Amino acid sequence: MKNNYVKKVCICAMMAALFVPLEMLAANFGKIAFLDNYQIPISCFPLIIASVMFGVSWGGATALVAAFVSQLAMGYGINWSTVIWMIPTVVYALTVALLHKVFGKKESFPLFALELFISAVVLSTLNIGASYLSNYITGGKAVANLIAIFASLKLMGGIAFAVIFAVITPPIIKRIQKTVKL
Image 1 (cartoon, rainbow, N blue to C red):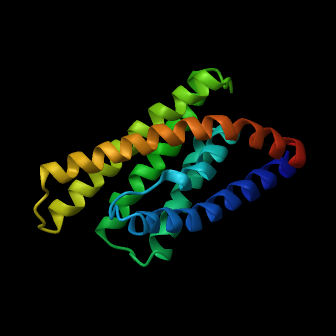
Image 2 (tube, rainbow, N blue to C red; image 1 turned 135 degrees about the horizontal axis):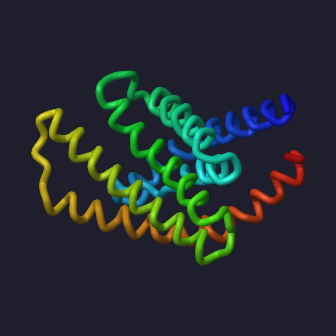
């Protein structure tokens, strides 16, 4: 029993640690592709693994640690916006875990893709809200057209990656479970 707990802690710590460089890569992709505010959600992959393998509490804890460390590593520090930008990540991991539990922990492609699609919509919506709120608090003028373009890009990216993650996640989880013997 204690051995299983240690394995879970180690895997979740690795997933949180993997989140940080993927988040940095994703944040810089938009600048490379001349889409300044666009971010490919590749950093969500470790959160999906932790949430699907271990459930709501482990997935949420992994996302909380990952989002906090990511905010610090990216140089944002600890201020009012730290919490605003952590919320979407944590809620995303919780949504993935809850939907996976509600859908009966089945990893069939259509159900898993639907879980990840719904979670991607939640993440995109919360990120758009965080962007708007952050802009509003700092006194910036949020332009409706820019937010609409940003929203459509976030949703398209979320849908595309939901399908990709639905294909690659189940075999990776099976491999981890087989290797670690959970």
